[in-house]
Length: 402
Image 1 (tube, rainbow, N blue to C red):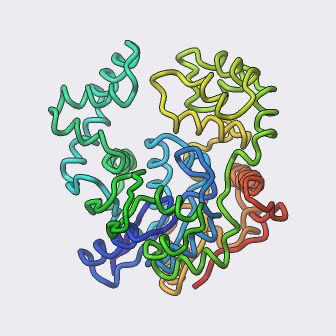
Image 2 (image 1 turned 45 degrees about the vertical axis):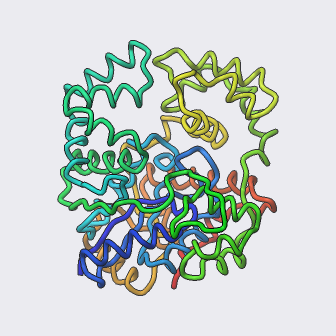
C-alpha cells in the first residue's frame, strides 16, 4: 500500500477534490491511503474558512481522505511559498508518505519541476530582487526571470494559481531533500475562483461558486458538488457562513492602536518597502475594513496579501511567534485506515503527534506556544460566526472519527 499526501484547504471539500483522489488512486492503486494536510479555521486568501476545521475534516473523510492533519494558522495564512513549506514539512515529518499529489492546470510534473529548480537557483534570486527593486510586482518579476532563463512557455506556467502552488510544493520537497515522489493531476472544469451562470453547469465548479451556493443556502444547487453526503453533513453541523466583518469593530479598535512598529513585526508587511507607516496611518483613519484596504494597499500588492495582513493583525500574530518548522502533527480526523497510519506514524514520525488536545500540554515550549495561538485563532474565528460558540473549542474538541 502506498501512502499519498495531499495539501488542501477543502473550503469546502467538493467533487474536484474527490476527482483528484480518484485519479491518484487509479494511478497508484485503489488501496492507496490518503493523508491530507488541511488549513485550519483561516485560509490562505486571508479569510475565515467556510466551515470550521472539524466539519471540513468530516467532509474530507466522507469524500475519500483517510487521515487529516492540520496546517497551523501561521503557515495557512501566508504566501504560497510559506504555505507549501509548512504543509510539505508536515507530510515529510509524518514519516509514512510516499507520494505527494497536487492539482495543476498543466498536468505535467516534469515541466513544473524545471520551474521549481529555476526558482531555487541563485540566478533567480538575484534576478527577481533586481526587478522588484525597480518597482515591478513580485509575481511579474518572477515570471520575467523565468522567461529569461527557461523561456516564455515555462514562464507562462506561473500565470495560473494551481501551477504556482505546485511549483512551491516541488521547491519545498527539493529544499527538504525529501524522497517523497510528486505527481500531478490536471485540473478539470471551472477555473479557480470562477462564477458560472446558467442551468447547465459543468461537473466541477470552483470552491468560490460552491461557497456562494452555501451563502444563499441554495442546497439544491450545492448538493451535486458536495460528495459523500456533504450537503447533509453541512445542514446538520454548519452554523452558517463566517465573516470577518462580524468582528469589524473589534478589529478597527486593534487597527487604531497599532503603530508602524507593530505592523513591521508582522511577516510580509512590506517593511523593506517602508510600508508600515502607511499601514499605521490607514489604521487610524479608516472607518471600515474595506476603507483600510483602500487606504493601505500599494498598487502592486494583491488583495489577498492585504487581507492576510488584516487577519494577522486581528489574530495578534507576529514573526516572533512563527517557528522555523512545524513543532507537532495535529490530527483533525481519521477513519479505520487512517488509524492504522497513525499506529505506523508512532514509530516513524519525526514530530510529536497530537490525537487529543490535552497532548499539547506535554509539548516543548515552541509547541505549547503554537498550540496556545491556535486556541486564540479558533476563539477569534468563532466571533465571526452567526452565533458565537462557547470559547475554548480548541481544548474541548477531539479528532473526527469515521
